[in-house]
Image 1 (tube, rainbow, N blue to C red):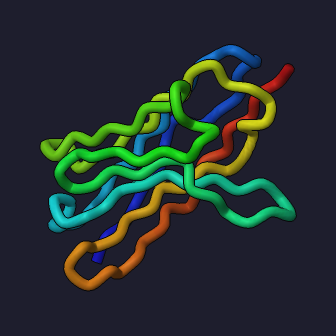
Image 2: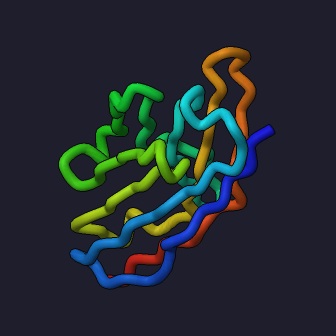
Length: 117
């Protein structure tokens, strides 16, 4: 069982930066593909970025060049550094984990990111 706890959301002006953190409580962090998704009302949840246990990242097109995902195995934590934010990035951001052995999926409760123009 894995529990995910996000932090770091908030409000920022366009052009600003935020760093999201997601702590994974459990003993399987090294087996988890960790990811960040986001969702706005009325739209489907979409992938922002994900990172494999070995550290290989994968980004949505809108995140490339602006967002950086990273993970710290010693802290069981994944980060999402978001730069050059725009109002279009306003959403609830969710941490996601997938166990590579059985593909069980876990979700955090989400953290709100609001970017004002």
